[in-house]
Image (cartoon, rainbow, N blue to C red; front, side, top):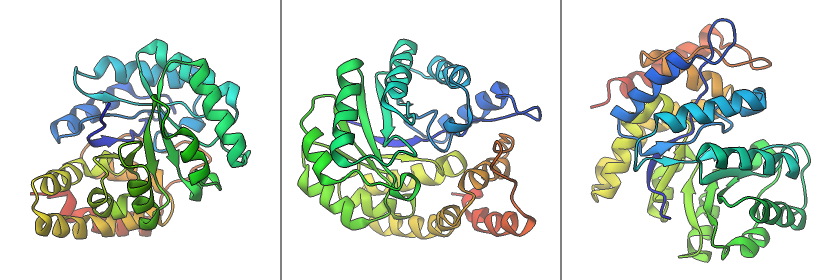
Length: 293
């Protein structure tokens, strides 16, 4: 299966009582679809999966599955701090209707590469799902190294890797080392154009929640071969994405949704609100993106 296009790593909207706001969710998804996204990735880190109960995660997965139309890619975040939990999450996602799950290293435990190989193989053996691996060392304190990728690259249900290290060297290494074996999926948003150049045909993108029109525009420009236009577009996106990466990522993405006229509530505690200065800086960076032509 070939992954393609901009796939937003979805926020989870919450109301004033801190419950999932499905009305706001539907408005948000309709807006993203109109702006050109190619599918949906709920219950990832942008969706605050680690701050939700299993029941809430299932509700989100069901809601997005029911909203999706034929031809739209569906990838469920199914991470947990231990293998048993990941298997349970992947099994429930499969029952809901997801054939692909996105999996990072189990958080907090910082397993060795050999342990991660056993972990991912255990999930593959237990549940008939396809996997997109997710390497995000800044958050997980561990990288999915070549030792692991070598071991999994030829498994028929390991589709590729969302690479969020921010390292262009890693993107080039994955693209060249695993050509026709693993798909490189862009997860380093501020260098997304560079990832496209090195073979990333899909982009699992948290910023697409509030920048979908611009992200999809960049994707179309690259596919059309208009590299000069793509560079200009990336230059506009870069400042806002760099601010996102500087801290309070989820809060800023959610604030960006509000700036786009699709409020999705606040992030859950322990994540705190943005300061007035943080809002002002991000609002300024978003101005040309809100008015994207």
